[in-house]
Image (cartoon, rainbow, N blue to C red; front, side, top):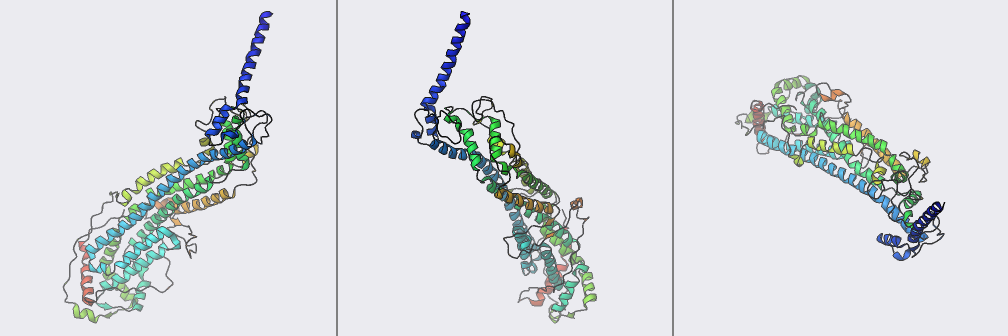
Length: 557
């Protein structure tokens, strides 16, 4: 009996000793003063000893090392601390895709410039003055392609531009191969009306139109998608925290200070409920964000395959030269059909007086072209390498918004064990972790969330992502349905191959008829040197007719 009594006395003394130690720490508040000061606050805000019945608004009432003024300052600090990791993760994501955008954009622009320079060099060597005197036709062609890439159908209707290019080229070449005749503007209008029936350039215009449309639509819309990602992330990540979120963060991060337990860290599940409540609106972006990323990945695969910008643009000089060869090989038949439909033109007096001029040869030949070549001159890389890299980043960015609470509630500021702050004491957190999104917050035990008032900024970004996703899906089928609102007179024009099926994989399975031109055909004069006159035209025509024999046969990719 005496032994039992002694044990009871010892236990009582131990409990009183532990309680006295905790109370002593709370009474002197020394650790709180040091921690509070380390945050940049005035240490004199902290009482030397704990205050009884402090009128706190967030932390538990009772004996405390906090004052109401301290609680307000620590609430502001809480807001900063929960915002910091969100900002850090978002900034990393923005930086990643801003860099990817710059890489793709630089590559596409340089590839187009390189293709123009390559064509100019090859055509100067091969056609000489005939090309130089008509070089503006090709210069305008590349300028229009660049304008479409930059501004879309608001600036250039791709189908109309390509039709005009071939019509202009036909007018100029028809005059040259029939230099012995004089042609009035009315006669050339008749030639233009028969262009589709004549098919003077063979199947090249149809193939090139399909390939250019697919490649340029895909490249342009993909780059637009890469532009959009940092913009959405920036706007969503800067949405302000609600007052109830700030109160919950204060309770989670700094109420342990008020009880003198400055080293006590929040329980992980407690942190998840707080952050899911604070980021409820952002999590609602996740579904449309993932749909957008899936569409980006789908278009990236198109860029690797049938819509490859690089394989279309890099050999464009060879493809256009192939069209010129077709015209040369069929010039007599084309001319005879025109004469039958439009009448026999008048002979040229100037040609009869200069027909004895000697033919001048062409220096140089077309460079051989290998379909296996994978150039890396544009921006020092290739499209395949760029798409492989960006696909990895796109996949990694999926579910970013729904996993943001987990990313925040990790690391050294969170306790992995049950010895943690649960919002009221040092103990295990018993509440169930609620789901992501605004609707689930109705049962959040730690953050009051008004589920009837979704954030306007985030809802607007959901709409933006939906629209961009529709553009990406259309581009996947070779169609451009984008509208540039910042471009005057866009009119919502569309252009594209109109291909939505697996047959997009091959050119042979698709045919797109060119709509008839109801307007007055454009008639373009053939420029010639004033000193050479008709003699120069005759000389160039003779040389052009013999060009097919000197050309290497080009290949389509």
